Image (cartoon, rainbow, N blue to C red):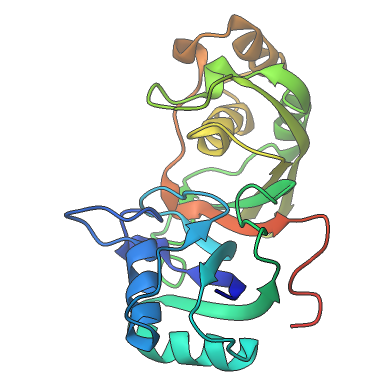
Length: 253
């Protein structure tokens, strides 16, 4: 069966995460049902990562096996037709080798977290960013973030229900920038623990607000204790923005 890679974006507010569930709507279910409108016997799809309830994506990647050798562009158009009106879209499709896997072939994942600093309620960005009431000290946040870059035991920043075999991960990038009243936190690593990024962001928000010193982040990391973590940031501001592979399957898409 020909295998295709799909680059997918979605608004996570309407879904209980990526992974298919029995009683709640998921992004995986929406995409699989659209594909099965084209080929009723199509098998399930695999994704690069399982985003949680309310988390968005601009660059999720999945693979699907089809019964016929579709033109990639026509396949994306056909899936999108059957996805309507769900807030999910296939933005690119590409033919890949039969052993290519959206998850296991990936070498990095990239996330963005959006935080908007203002007193007034969000209107256009409601559900798409975390509103915090006060301005953030960006330099202090970056100083705290620097302690989290590299190879570490991230037990402190790992959800209790995390199923990863080890808490040891390598964070390749963690940057904090601001433009106007919006703070953006970008994180890049080969893989992540459950709630790791939102745990980072909630902790760094405490630094930005002046409740923690940057050195407190280092102490929390070294504690290797979930209780030492700051509050977990809400899902609204988190986006899976991209997945890296040794060769970009969408380079010619």
